[in-house]
Length: 300
Image (cartoon, rainbow, N blue to C red):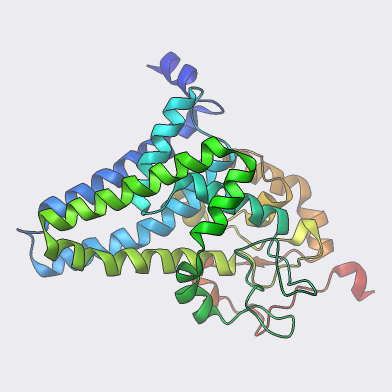
């Protein structure tokens, strides 16, 4: 079994854990559907809340690490896993990959003279006066701002094969949701608000991954949290400044990178928060505005 895993996994044996979690996430959706007619209302609400949280968990952990370092050596297996992710999360994993690549090109950049950002996910894209957008509008409107045509054009420009595979993923998850609705329309009406809430929670997490970061300093592009339980469950998503500094580095090596560059991070003003990113509003050092920390060298 160990030898088989090593042949299947492209980078690390530890990728078996998030890969398995990805398949279990889809199994959870199916279990949610199966239990809906017989479970009490309080259990269904709990399951809905867990699903909402699990969307953010998957996007920021499983899916995110997968798009940077695909888990499997065999491309068809990566395609299959991307399809599973698309069904679980309700969007195209392939399109997300290209949107996220733009995120790393811009690193939550500020609008240029034309009001445009390279990073479509930038917290500054819809902000004013050089400040980040209000957290509430970013969280609840970002999902509604997606432009599938622009994303498709971006993907097609770089890889027509990926563009049409992304369309297949979209058709697959839409068909999946429609089928669930045909089989039980009450379930899909109950399910969709938790689906939307889950994506809002993902944007909440994403907002504080960069709020207070410094768009002008590569080592301080992201904001990190070293909370142990969070990083254990979210596959080291807390090491976000480190990730933006070395985006292709495998998720299992983030702590090692942090130890190597910690002193340089401190000197350059890399922001670190105490709680997980989704709870960053509880951090006592969080600035009222999206101003980066002043580097230690500039204080002298």
